Image (cartoon, rainbow over all chains, first blue to last red; front, side, top):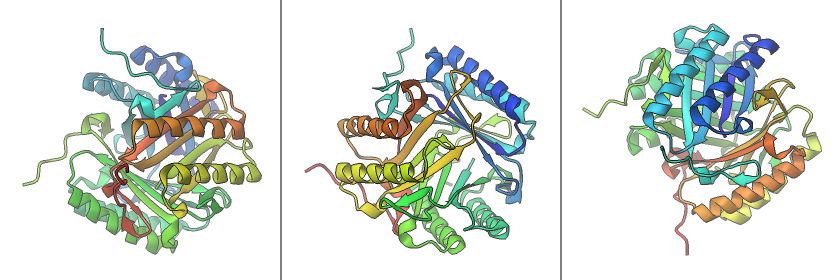
Length: 125
Length: 125
Length: 125
């Protein structure tokens, strides 16, 4: 954890764009969270044209969900969201009404990484 | 948000069926929630035959997960679930033991829509 | 529910490996939880090579998320995680830094199974 899932229409992100976005998300997350770089996992799911809808009409929705451990402050999460939005919109060129981002949380005790149950998020210094 | 993810076996829903189900889900959600129509995003994920299992046996599982903001009443969510089940079963013709639906929630402050952190769900009038 | 989602790179799990892993996950979950076997649903999502990243570098990430009802003890969830890790690593042969597992929870009232809102997890005897 974090586990990032980026969902876009096939063709929106080519190989280079995925690598660049993955690099940007990883760098951002490491700076924000202080977690080891190899805890950051990103999966791109692509769907065929015609498989996504906004307002009931076909649209090339770009969705990003990330699953993190419980324990970050509201300010942390708000600031992270804003930065993620910028990265995702830059990469996909999607209009505002075709992007959606959500941060899901699980207690550290409900996640495993590097063959170990995850430690709690450290308390702020 | 909401972000609906509909997962079915390839071939269960053709182009027309997806459009119809997306229209039905969108209309239902707007009526229930009162949110603007263009906040409703739906993505269909399709898997190849052989990639889903119920009771350990291959099955054409139809799964619907939706991610909404925290703040709706239990009655709201129960009623929404029942309506979603009916729409999904009508569209897929899946038997009862091959359908699963779950409502996931995130605090409004953990979601972005239309380039803004989402507002809280309004209190009931 | 549970709904298991197993995400791997195409080719990591062949037809037989998916059936074996699905069988193992189902058996484990039934033993742990005591739920009816046909409540256990598993979907395999496969992504093309180049669509997943660990530490910002391409990697064949193996991710498992499961969605269960609220109400299990921390000990239950920790023990389940450890067993899931072993099954997933055995099936995929992924190294420790390319596996991630998370348990997401929803209140029973936010899930439907067998055409009914789910009952609460029984209290421990």
